[in-house]
Length: 268
Length: 265
Image (cartoon, rainbow over all chains, first blue to last red; front, side, top):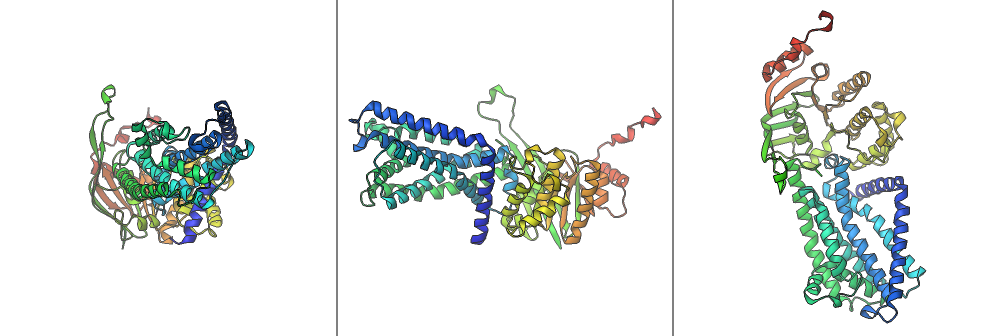
């Protein structure tokens, strides 16, 4: 397949998702209201805690804003892979989609990347509105932010592929996303600094890539930290990417083949 | 030359009960959907698969489409193996599935067809004209911009047929394609199917209807409990000949013979 063919397919997938999203009109409004309420809650929480509470030397509001915003983006990004498979099973399209001339892993990838559009817009809205509306200091190192963002995206994609594989294999991909989001919520430092955790939880948190993503993104976005300062976190994220991405591709291919063998592609 | 070849193909579906199943009645077991089936379909022919429910007709079509993988044996489509070269097979095959729920409900008929055509490598520049032509061929022009969630069963069926044909495949798989169609639409559809071999396409058709198999088929295979029970050419045969052949090969009782016409009651 040439580049034009791939772009054409990506455009077709994005168009399908955009048209479907537009036709669920109320979805946008509900999400925007929910996001606004969340921002306000964090703002007043930071105000209640007072200016003396400075986790890792940062004001609490930007600390929690970047932590929860980036956390939500990565978790819902992973969840998009799962939703892509679940929705295809529920609409009965999965069996037909896997018999088109587009290989299934590529189709899943295109669908999930298209579905990342929503969380990306939400992230920019969340950070933009929070930092501008409530007025907070921002000193971004753009290059470091982009690198951390891309590495974190690859990790999220890998988890998403594994969740999609679990959905095909045991129809319970949601278990992985639930597990990941629950443990990440309190062990990765989305809401509070991980240094306050007991040692065993702190160590467990270090094994979750999201911990390093949030820390690196905060420092790159709010303190202007560069590659030298973030070397440790970026190195860990690269390592996670190098291991998780190939593993997730193998696991997904295996699950797809197993479902075609068992005749369970459309089971949910 | 043969377009589709099945060599000693077997397909087994294994059922494993869920964990903590003591509350339910589900039991482990297996269903032998196909057992050592060999058949071939010549290029440009219409090949009908007859058989009772659960005989393995849909399984054959799903195996040919690469939707399923066989437990044993080999399937080749236009010389490519479904197991070793599925991408080549998928480029050749168009499959009108029996399942009505296989479209994106909040897209229109036109948008659905355009999407699937893109995934099947139909060039962007050709797609609008091809989509329009296909919608017209299956009688859905007036509903082209209606969201498919508002479609009736028959409309879904026609859209499924359009989707299978839009990439102009060389092998077309039709699973009970007229099941939800009214008689006039069915007659129109069979006219369309009869023209396909003229364009070089090979058709595999799963049906329960003897008259439809006789009307369009060149060859007929009878499946019974996953085994190939019989095979014959259709030329010169009528629906009654095929009915007699079917019951002779499957060993089932033709209860229609015992039905008393109302006029004699």
